[in-house]
Image (cartoon, rainbow, N blue to C red; front, side):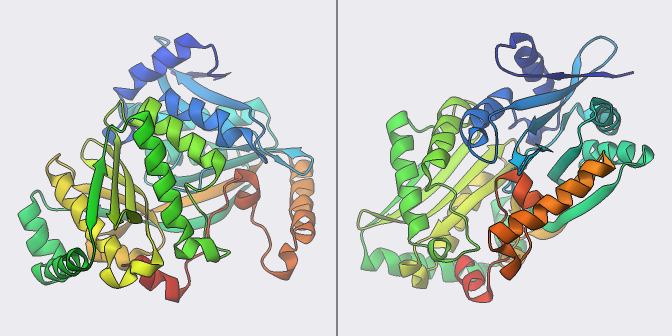
Length: 396
């Protein structure tokens, strides 16, 4: 029924056109992942070590030669080995796109094709396990008796909210909780001169100013001083990625939302989200620790939720970790995000595991924690769980 081929995106007008057609046939919340997302990622983050700047796409076509699935694959180097990895340790996860009516079958076709290609080390995920295409890939690999190692598994926090803002206030958030947030808002407004920005279609200048403000907040947050934290917007490569992604893809498609709170002209808190139909991915939220007594993070969450209802948003994907404070906003563990290593060649697998131990030794990792497969292969290390003293701050 399906046939597969490996392609590159550069100078491939046909693949780009087919991909845009496919976006009309995938689940609405997955329409975020157009070819622009990946081409921007490839020339920014994907071109820095351990990534090699090379990216290919395993594509699935039906009998009418219509594109039914796309799986992005980057090629980082770990020691002497070239790894084939999806990478991406922050939501929204880079995953398999598949026509909604054939997700499992498309995944199965991709699983068979990945083995046929003959790559030695495959890094699959992290991806949500409820996605049928992902189940299909693993099903085919299991059927072919490929050795699969689960490398990581995290709860995915999802909030499915009532149909109206009034219902949400009454049954999910609670009037008492919202009243406390209002009190913090009033106290902050009485003590300082405030400005709240909600940007969804920023100009190039506004985007640059926004990213600079996000970096300022990050650098004054717990992330800046904690070895487990990872700044999202502070590095030059990350700034380039987000600048291009916002300007060239998210904003033109009406996918982008950000809230920035300033006190006395100083940025103190932000939320960055991607909104697709009734689903909103909460990509990042943070605040300046010096302002924690005002619960500025919760103030922006309230703004985000109320605005979402004006656009029919009732589902929030909060990513993984910190479920305890996200649950206050209606989030529940609704899925799992897992990553896998598939060693197609057993001899290469032995070299791979030995290489991990050596790299850990050179990095001083054996004195702390051994480097995981997915951390080394992805190039985007996943932060460890936030310590208790920081979790409480994040909840604010």
